[in-house]
Length: 179
Image (tube, rainbow, N blue to C red):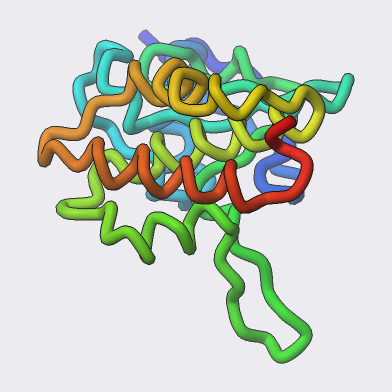
């Protein structure tokens, strides 16, 4: 008996990956770890509840959204463009990595404890900031919008206050996100 396979091709962090043949039942988090050598997305609960495995899907219309990878098959992502936690920092002209505003804020606020949940929180906050760039929010609604965006992510170390505070600072200090 052989394992059924299919080809998959996608864009991960701006790089074309594939075509490659992988098992039909392979989860995306396993694809990222085993085939793309990207281990930043975490396998936490295996049920899509903790969201440590979250990646960003970049849609053709310029919007982005979160997607849990432990409960989503790799083939769902065929032909799509995604970003993982490894895709947020950029290289400067000097060759040094430059963290995203969200990553910097999380460091500045000492948001990370064990950091297991960090990839999901970074991706969720990034999707929020990108949404607010297109649809700014009223100042009085910022806290609720942040809570709505991060609320489904679980931090077992209870670092929520620091994550929320860091995102609040980014939203309030980035021109054009608040009206």
